[in-house]
Picture (cartoon, rainbow, N blue to C red):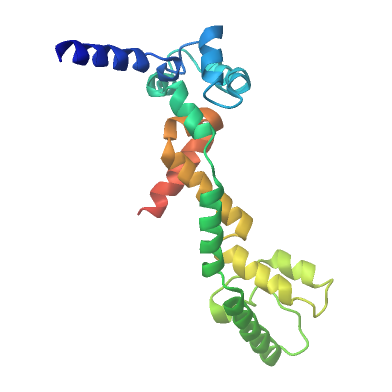
Length: 208
């Protein structure tokens, strides 16, 4: 029994010393890189074009570089190869529920009726959204001047954009936040500290 436990401990120790458990601060040998290439798709290309150049550019004594001691090659590759499809489907559905087109059409109808009754013969200005507490930027008015009365779809677009974002931007932002939460260190290494700080501040503001 003792020999079995000892063998098990040795096996676990050896597995924990594989290249996927090395910090991204430690360069890989060709043999280690080949081993990881057998576990992670396109690893060699990712190592040479992403991981190594980004780590190499970091100042030797920077605080972020010191934090990367905890980020392993295995952790980074799991992050890099994340399947975003489920997140994208989830947030796309969330956006559709939040900005239901039937509701938006009703809002637009209310705005059009209000505007035409109060200002007959005039094109909408930045005050068009006031009955619904939705601001319309003056830039929309400038464009509407060329469309005469064909402004309905622009009102819908602006209601969405001013309330939050269009679907592509909304989904992209939510997926970005989920990726950061999954592994902040890997996210920061991949995208840089300024962008990572932007995402972190966005998360903190939403949690207030």
